[in-house]
Length: 149
Image: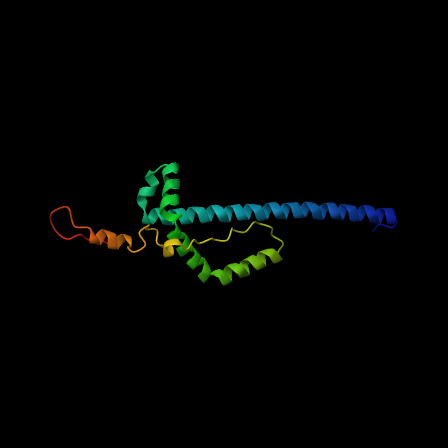
């Protein structure tokens, strides 16, 4: 046990240094866990997407980006995502509060801005859906009925 004030100060400074090192190690561990969770999420979500659309495995990164922009990142896609997020909003708000309480300063996702044009219908013709438009066109093959769906 230190007896003098100078020895006590030196002991406390050493303890502070040790706590700072321990904090750095815990922060590194937390970041590594977050990276692993993010990678796991990416892999599972992309695997699910490829399960339903196997042709995605054969396209380039540029083609994949175009597919996402044109096929998913639409007004309709954003509306669906907002509905899904809205249905789990209470859970997300609770998780955000818990994260903030833990002192985690990880940036949160940008709130979704859902445009209201066309009532969420990506079709520029506001009066017809894609199926209605296709069903209204006569069958040009010359035989049989057109099957939509």
